[in-house]
Length: 240
Ligand code: ADP
Ligand code: MG
Image 1 (cartoon, helix red, strand yellow):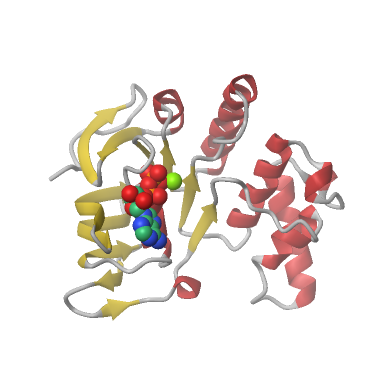
Image 2 (image 1 turned 30 degrees about the vertical axis):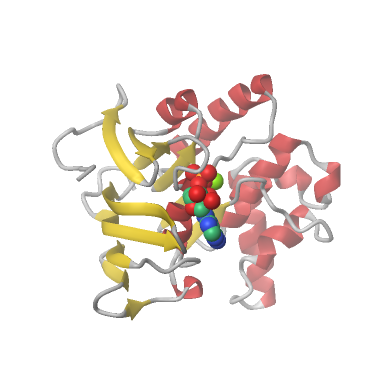
């Protein structure tokens, strides 16, 4: 939550290669608890790879990752915590709702660990939080792009993750809608106080959604800009 001084996420000199391609090179960064860090960069700069590493969908070739004080990946020490044991919520680039499940079914899916009854209640609460309760019984094809994204957000938030990862949340929407949804998402994230790492290729989106903005270029973290509303300048990094 806001005001908490803890570090939610820390990457230390993380490198990830795919064969001859170095997708990320020596990336270090920190996200404070309750903070939103936006990472902006062109297509192919390593944004999705960065999120996948945090979620545990990729393993780093070098460096380490800490989530909420726990080391979840350390290439040298051989530490590895699998994705299902990391408390992260992931909103994928295209929303990626299951087409054969209702909005409620989609949100319940992320709560498979809970007993049935509790699962339903928690899923309804999550939908209510993103003001999508009225959409519970609809299937993805019956939802607008923006409504689908809200359901995807509810699905990511329902298990109460330590950190929310957003991968170009509005990439496939047209500009007018994007602008409106960006404002909606910002208001929602403000209200929830959720820690988040948001990647986008759109600098306006980064500025609006992030407390701080870092830039990724060809797998290297370039510089850190501070959004006007950012609370502190001193404690958070980053490009090394
Ligand atoms: P972005 O999300 O910024 O567009 P990505 O993280 O998807 O960038 O990709 C960064 C680089 O890594 C690109 O050159 C991409 O082609 C490469 N890459 C990503 N995933 C894989 C993979 N599974 N296999 C091979 N190359 C990959
Ligand atoms: Mg991407």
